[in-house]
Image 1 (tube, rainbow, N blue to C red):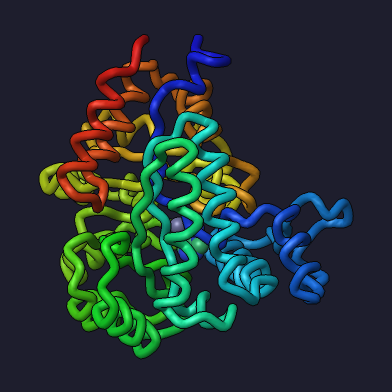
Image 2 (cartoon, protein in one colour):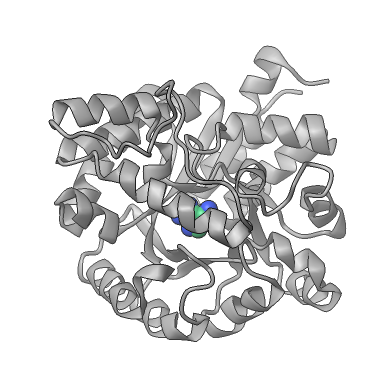
Length: 340
Ligand code: ADE
Ligand code: ZN
């Protein structure tokens, strides 16, 4: 059994986390108050300690309701320092749990909701990162992300601003949002326009195996946000294994959004045993009452991952991270140096 300090020290990687999904209810209240904003009354439960969204209905409706709450939480932010503060806050907390590398999904559309243009938003996030990195050494890169239910035109604009302002911390392009809005093919122009080598798309979360196939073939991604529903299609599993597909698995998110009812039915262990290059993510930790440390702990406690297997998940993540070779090497060294 792994616990306490030895578990904390195990090097962890969060390869799937949405920046605005890390705003804690406490932080949302603090930011709202300094900005003279009243958060949406539906956003928190009566204790004010938890975000909430209507959770009856199927996975698709849950996701849609959650995405509305996500936008409501974002809208308490109004200034550059709000983005710096939430970035620092998450990286600081993640580093305390032994996390060595985080890749955030960031969204120019959400920055615009706050009143920041893309360049200002990146500058603010970079400031939060520099502060956290000085303290703990944690590394971070950013995936500029379009939001599927905002539509293909908005996605193309995100790709254009990404291409128009090159920043060394922005190393990937991604797609999140409602997997059932529009078609995957509608977003091909955006993926082709971003000019970034790193690519990932949410697929196989609130929609079935076919979106995974389409994301792979039309958007040319090899990393997939979730991909869990690929388990329903034996042939797809074989294909995904043969291309060394990387499922970014977020167990607490899948349970909170009712993609699976419980740990027993979740395919994390089956993916790993089948030989897929699994990595872990916290997705929207403040909404799903989790953290990257907790996701590793769940893998250990409920899916039987040994310390060696958890280290393999971290190694997978570093190997597949959208990061330059020098930092990748340093991160692999940190994992190799971990004493059992
Ligand atoms: N945006 C933030 N979290 C998301 C999720 N779990 N799925 C799709 N889009 C998202
Ligand atoms: Zn996600």
